[in-house]
Image (cartoon, rainbow, N blue to C red; front, top):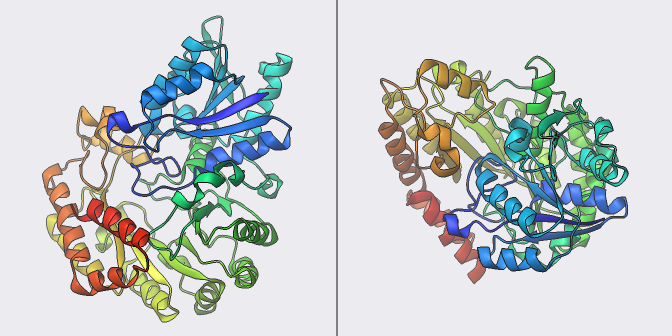
Length: 483
């Protein structure tokens, strides 16, 4: 079949949804990893696959001209919550102007498949999508949809939902993402915490076993978690790991293809035990490609492991700190103490790895103005140059959303229209009797300015500039953060 993976334009709505994590709008451009995984599986089967991204200055008219002149059998959308309206609008235009079929996959079609069944030519793929989409294409060709697990579709006007697929047991069975489909634009992808562009993304595991009740992980993990919880009494799915050799081979390939750095976007990179991590690091040391990872502070306290990460080329570790108030950490089920944060930061600095903290205000009703101030000053005093301050959002499907609804923390009616109201670095969609939304919004602005307008951090950022493009990246991302 001729298949097109499609990202419609979003400029007319003012903001472009970020689709790798799916819980905010774009700060800097990242490759659409979920789409590229699907593309590689379909290409391996022999299908003709194209990838079209209309978010780079293209208008709705450009998109319509493309669709009206194209001859694809199937269009595929990877849809996160913030992109539902954009993708549904695009799909309606396709249905009105062609005979093509539409496939939606991702966290939001998993959570609310009924929203995407616009006609009997539309299908919602639930959960971990790569092999389900392959089975669905086969089912279309043989007219045997009922045998395809993990899909929802319309039949005689009624929604049909097949049995759940579960999760992919062997992640090494997946081909590497089809990065050749974005080769012409690969220089657009960067990460301000990494030294050079182009930057690509790599996923070495799927899932997280911890119980933070507000968390929305990367979009691939979130879709598989939503589907698993639905069919397994609310339990989280098992974490699945790629083998060290499989990971090292992908690093070698992306380096050979001209990438200068890698963001590892696992929910937590340090799963699988020390032996596995040391084996991965030994291989990556030979590859010689800078990278960064996400980790919990309590998983990065081993001196030998942190040293191995540094020697392998790790340039930063993104730490989920959330608060410097122990009462808040306990209430949000972080299962970590404040002292651990300080030890992790000290150890990373010891080996020259840049720590980056993530702070989230408003995730707990026990938080106060005083504890937010303590968090701002506490994290600002740590030896680090990056911190993201945001406001907790009760995303659909999370325990936090259920609690916010039940206890009246959610700001109505804004929480019912996240697509137009979500801005977690600027706007609060929760409000507490002793901590109203206005206080949360002011806290984020104050925190960013207190942290980033520190002379030492300004000097650090300026020292990172080695080209006009790097200066442009710094100005663009810096202004978005402190404005």
